[in-house]
Image (tube, rainbow, N blue to C red; front, side):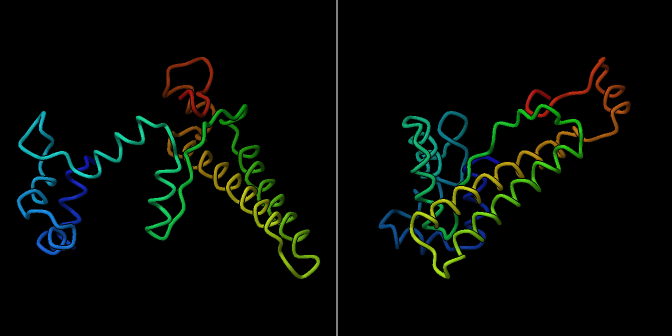
Length: 168
């Protein structure tokens, strides 16, 4: 979805007039944000495009992390899915289960003294992020069709071997 389309959707839920007033901008500028950009239409550079350009220029994910926190969420980067056995469902499932077991072990160890230190909380966060990353890779492999039966995958792809997650 393009940024102007996102903003058009937002404007169905939130009043552009109120947005313009709260931001101290003209109503016409806010409406321009919901039009295609200047290269392909008459729209104005909108805040979403500008943020995307800033992130691309800095290559710093802390910007998007900050935005996610302001929206009540947390940013996690999509993983590089390069599993050795991505076409094998059982090893992929086992990877998720192992990450979950590792997270539970870290939590159990940290909670054993009935308190969680800052260092332990940081370790729990790290294991949680790793579990989310491995699970996201699994979901990508599912969406890419990498867990179809081997012979069906090979036949559909017209290949002598099945695709690998991340290499499709």
